[in-house]
Image (cartoon, rainbow, N blue to C red; front, side, top):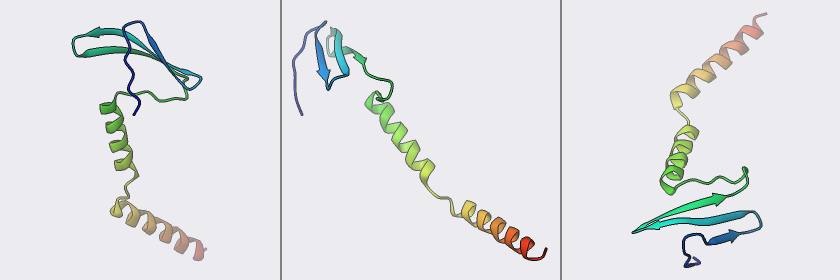
Length: 83
């Protein structure tokens, strides 16, 4: 981890197209401005964690849904054989 000390108004550049500007420092809070291309996702860590959690949940397979899908497929195959 690179640790950099900056004052309000100063910037940090990441790569060629990401600029982080220190907007304000109040006590233990730091307000940042982030300029990045639209193709780069920028999230607070707690939001990013929730997104990852939801993506994991969405990718889990529900066995009952799979059983229903297989039943429908088998029924369609059977119906096709009888024609």
